[in-house]
Image (cartoon, rainbow, N blue to C red):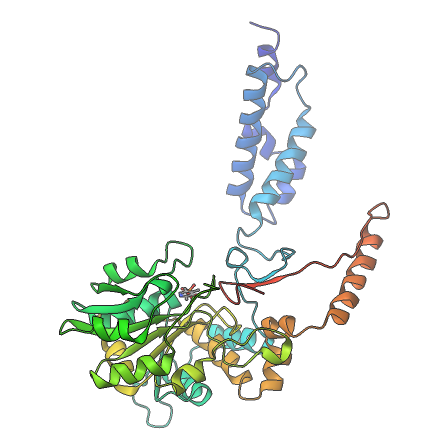
Length: 401
Ligand SMILES: *Cc1c(COP(=O)(O)O)cnc(C)c1O
């Protein structure tokens, strides 16, 4: 036997490790299965390293127990957990997009803890509708006649396209055939929804006459997609929502707009570029507007659909709507988030995304100083400096800021 192989004998079995006082104590705090898995992994790794000739002395049983203890604790941590966002991007999909307001969190908690009137009309005692809790609010905030919610905006676009134009053509400008990331590409979404893509115009210029020329007996709707994560600048032309609407009306066709981030408030007073708000799209006469719940709106992941009653009704009744149904926790958080917008000052104060967007450089510097002080208390030798850096809104919103 080679000298290092004889070290294998010094590696204790898992059972023996589990008998140690350290791991016995740990078993009162975390599931034994996690400790066993950690012990197996630690000893297997040691054996591999011995066989590979990487270890020349075997660690003591105590050391192996300490390693197992550490690894078992790591395994007991939740996999999905809070992190600090130091990326400079406010709405980062990989970091879970919008943090929720206190009111949204407590609404989720109280609805989750107990039974609720999710689908119960408390006045009549009859069966109610789960979207009734947010429909009136969404209509109030956007001026729309009707509203509904699905799981996310990708789902909302797909559902709206399918419900309004399955088997027919959707006319869309080549300047708006966007990819949002995570495989959400407008042409692919259409194909999957059984809607035929009818591209018009060019990448940089699309005119009203292009839409007019494209309308035929197979046309199901006109689609407008907000180019949320890029901009076409320079020699460009795009058709406004109201021009598209008047053309569509002549032909009795609906217009669907994917607004992406969907702002409920104009943020230009805070130095951000003017972006169309949902109310403006509705006001321009767009039949159905879809947008995300967890981008600039600052709520939970959701796909919001607002617009004309008959169109929203068709969407709500489509079988896919059930497959994309929002859960009660989302609806609770969404209702609480939307309620903030009834008073814009409240929205700016309470919704974390809006609060962060509206922060002044002076306030930001003050909180950097606080962080700097706390960091230097944690570790004296840590050198930390405050340097100005631009940050991004993210989430495919406001690409040029
Ligand atoms: C972000 C975005 C989507 C996808 O929204 P999710 O809520 O992430 O599903 C779709 N369209 C546009 C224009 C977007 O910006």
